[in-house]
Image (cartoon, rainbow, N blue to C red; front, side, top):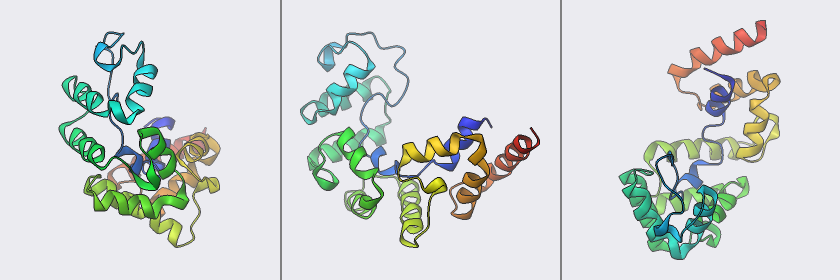
Length: 194
């Protein structure tokens, strides 16, 4: 388990689980896609296609394209279609970026979880992880380094000096599956020994 993977394990569910429900296209490899992509407004590269797909009026075309090219699973496509029918997400967001930005803020976690539950936008396991995050917040707990969103937590937990703290946090709050915990402790021990 490398440092990047270990960091990802410790921050796996922090703040981004809810935003996952709103992800539409380009979730998988795009190596076999030739640019420009005619079906997506002739976007010239992955970033341009993402911008195109962030616009609500293009959501249907993007879902179809992503599903046809195996970029999202059938379940992800169905969740995206559900979201499309709703037109607005928590806080009135209308795009993946806006919803991710809104739900990445810990002050909005209750609203985002309620929205995801009410509209069945998250798989059960993902929803349970989001509830664990809410539980930490509700109990007044602090995230490693007092990080407030996914990017802050990933940056903090990627630093070798903070890995022990991040693993302890993840273990204490049930964010690391038991089968990965032993490996995380081995990596930590190896790092401590230099």
